[in-house]
Amino acid sequence: MDTKFARRTERIGRTTCSYRRAGKCNRNPCRFLHIETPSPPAACGYGNTAYSYGKKPHSSSENTPKYGSKKALLGDNGDRGDATRVAKAFKKSSPRICKYWINNNCVHGEQCLYLHSWFRGDGFSTVTKLQEHKKVITGIALPVGSDKLYSGSTDGTVRIWDCHTGQCAKVINLGAEVTSLISEGSWIFVGLQNAVKAWNIQTMLEFTLDGPKGRVRAMTVGNNTLFAGAEDGVIFAWRGSSKADSPFELVASLTGHTKAVVCLAVGCKMLYSGSMDQSIKVWDMDTLQCTMTLNDHTDAVTSLICWDQYLLSSSSDRTIKVWACIEAGSLEVIYTHTEENGVVSLFGMPDAEGKPILFSSCRDNSVHMYELPSFSERGRLFAKKDVALIELGPGGLFFTGDESGLLMVWKWLEVPKVASS
Image (cartoon, rainbow, N blue to C red; front, top):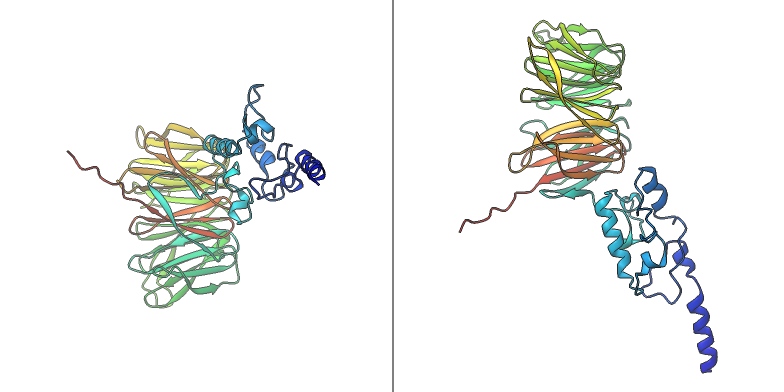
């Protein structure tokens, strides 16, 4: 009996665990071997994901154990804890979120080579996830004095969220893609195909502003004027009207861009517009005339923000450019920051200590956070898909909306003050 048991144990000890090869073994210790290089598991794709970004899990040095080897997985002394330490070291050097953890089906736990967190960094944290939209979130607005958060999506809906409960209080089905959404005072403006919807949340009045051709991709308000950039490259401008049929009157159509206008910003008494035609145009808000065109980007201009006396622009060409007024009102690039991937959008806000932070959403499903003016990295936010927009809320809150329809609520954390001795 003892001999048979010994032989059986010996056979088991030489057998490779089939569940390990499939990446599904959850026994520790396991009576079968865990020393073969596992095939790419169905629940967590290591190799292809890491190499696709140009970063291998380990160097090619002969002295460096390759991922999947006995030394890497078990250590020199067969200690399984080394696998966890290898994973943690890799996470620190290559912060990529595990796409399977996002969907709650990663089976590797602490030994997964990718992050199981929505962020990396200090001074902020997640509050909640609002997953109701089915497609790209294209607008987030929190009107002043309201306890409701509005979000629009290309799934054809505007959702109204109760800020106290975090629950969706109402769904407005517009029957067409919502391509932009902003608020100004008591008004909510919704960009659609060939039109802008205007809702007054106090009087409950609703108006349709006609004129744009194609999708309204960007809107902003400045100098008591609503500006809307359309797919045909034209920017429409409405101002208040005393007419009975509509409180808005179309006062101008700003032409000059040859492709879709995708971003607008107001600052220093100027309107700035960015387009798929790779240019930025500067418009005088009094005369509504174009005063200059900036052509430094080599791909679509995706976002514009005005910060103090500076203009910041981002592009699919992977750059963020900082512009300053040099002479006679002309703008010149004084600094260029390059990302590894194309930039989707920019947003600026102060942290809990009042330090200026720039958010740069990139085409790698992450948002890079930089301290200004140094551009030193402060942290990183992660999402299911590319983050289309970022919006500031009250009380240290801010929001991100990604292309999967996930709306995340974040909060800046107060830094504990050290008592002086």
